[in-house]
Length: 105
Image (cartoon, rainbow, N blue to C red):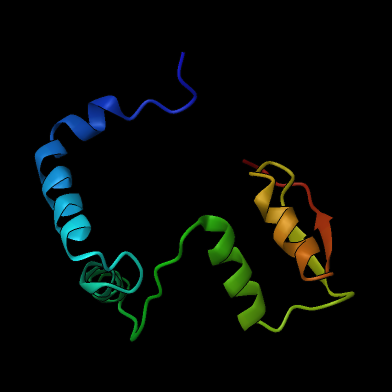
């Protein structure tokens, strides 16, 4: 059994995905290209905010958010133990202290 099986979800949009990937491969702007700008605009409009920033990973997104809040050495950051390892990893990377709290899922 696959850990994550997205085969059913992608079947309906596969041709569009392949076309869009082909466009990116053809122009070669993998970072900060027009598709990234388009995605950021769509996301910012959807969220009703002025800006949105696309990230390479959820780990990068968590790191940017904590850095924007000024989290640093010795700061306590509340988090759940029921999450991917990157959540606590990013806190530790900033030399802050992950404090695992009980949640009611």
